[in-house]
Length: 164
Image (tube, rainbow, N blue to C red; front, side, top):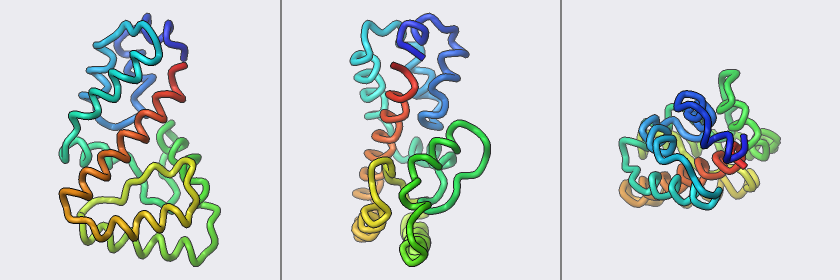
């Protein structure tokens, strides 16, 4: 959708366009309410500013829509399709790398009580595994901030692909 169409869409239509960007309805609603945007830069800046307010509760809410890295996304919705595309490098990785990621995911979930979140797009399977292993050494607060930063990156990438 182009920016003009997004600006002119009904509230429900505009929210539907960005719903797959992140499973945080309050962010979706606030971004839609901030329309009209004079430019894509203004849209992206507002989206980033709204995302900066996210804390742990928003992270937990958003993680409900994210599959484990290395596992096939479930469902037929747009978010599942995007997750499959974004994680293509891991899904095509060799068996040893996939097994290492599965084991790392398990350790991460035991340590932090949530799925490991990383912007997969543009990263190789090896890079994602290395990042997982590095982040296992974080304390809870540091890791929460890193996961939120990754969530912001994913959200903005998806927004930029949705509204041009």
